[in-house]
Amino acid sequence: MVEQFQDAMSTSPDAIAMLGHPGADALGSLIDEAERTRHYRYHAKCRYSAIREKYTNNGFGYVGPDLYQAGLTLSMA
Image 1 (cartoon, one colour):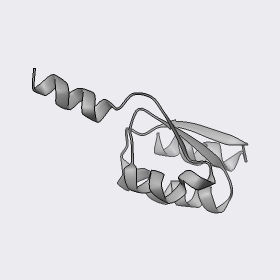
Image 2 (cartoon, rainbow, N blue to C red):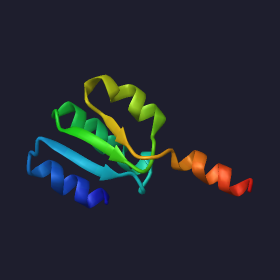
Image 3 (cartoon, rainbow, N blue to C red):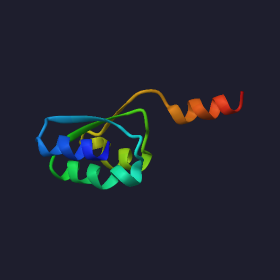
């Protein structure tokens, strides 16, 4: 997924939709680079609160359920 994100940025798209499974540590610097080069991102499935707070006013969006809360709720069942 990290390589796919890099490949997507190299084509200069209008936007990039991505899943966040690699984690904030793996994708954070790429998201920073995408922000600098004005590639808009839409994030699905994994919420990165710190990154989202940093870039939400510039187009970083999130689509999907709160899977952390769903997992927490399931673990308590």
